[in-house]
Image (cartoon, rainbow, N blue to C red):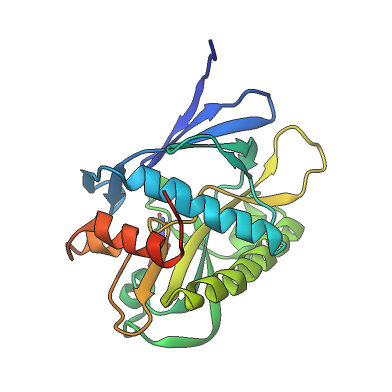
Length: 240
Ligand code: TMP
């Protein structure tokens, strides 16, 4: 019998040890949270959808020159990934104003930026994931300057790819969050994208009506979260 060890449980996923020391198994839960856990619900079927949607994006990103931890989907809930040491930084790329940038800087929602805005946040629930800059990241040893440059260019390359794919599916990619790491088993491993890309971690709007089709449906109580995520999957022709 397979003996798997829980490495880490997050709000929406569980990471287990994989069949080898260089792999892990990422399990997608139906839990949905917002506001650092203040809002919480179980949306039956969400984990399955995100598993398939994330597989779709990660496979495409790999082909577009954004190496990532995805190896293969194991079943509806789980995928086999490269086991990584993850940098404690969330990278957000914004194309259109929404969410925290509006609240923080008083920018009107829907303003389109002339070029993507890249932001870094420290992953620290106790501090509420504060916004940090390159100097903080290098000074406090969260990533080296060279690694951060690499992360920045991967995030922007991912943005170009995701903009193309979503645009073709009549979706506006407003913003998205990514994380990065290095293979634990290789001393000089390349930086790769980890985690997931799904309506939990991106803002997708209908390209014609600006209808929200992502976790904001939950955050703002706009209707059926599952229906919104299913709409994203169906427009991307992701079968789950
Ligand atoms: P924000 O506007 O709340 O800063 O979020 C920007 C994008 O990043 C949005 O698509 C949601 C995503 N995001 C996460 O996936 N996890 C997080 O912890 C946060 C704060 C944002």
